[in-house]
Image 1 (spheres, rainbow, N blue to C red):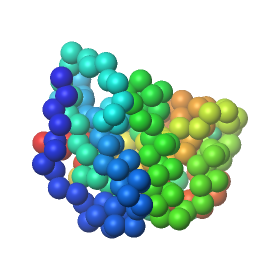
Image 2: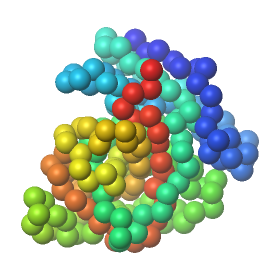
Image 3: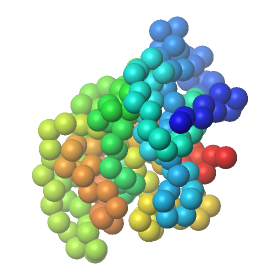
Length: 204
Ligand SMILES: [Zn+2]
């Protein structure tokens, strides 16, 4: 059962994005909904995937909330080698079982803003990562997904630091995206824009 939160207003950033977009892109952007499920551990709502309204969706029995992307979009934010990050969770939404893909959504935002789309064709993480204080190396995989990451490096499991409610989308390969919740700190290998989403932990 999906509860659609149609009445959530658009963020100021979403209004600006829609104002710049072509009518075709406006139509696309308004089809995207972020799906939230309850966290088994503490009952908070957390992002589970992405849903595009014209896609076929096999409804699961569990309850979900769908918020329009335009109600959680908080603009873009620059990441470079001085801004380390960790992967919040494995972006299963990019397997397309739930509709639209995060990387597809990133491409629309990049296109509307006139950003370099080539940045989304490759993994943005350096091979060298830090795991438990030690440097290790992860070779890149082939496919690229829009991964949910945070620059709040003091996460515990799925939980962001108290009071912090943003996650970002960055392009990661299947190998780097695989290392979610392992406390692996990654560093960007380029300068690029991340998409900023608000309301990660709780929206109702
Ligand atoms: Zn990679």
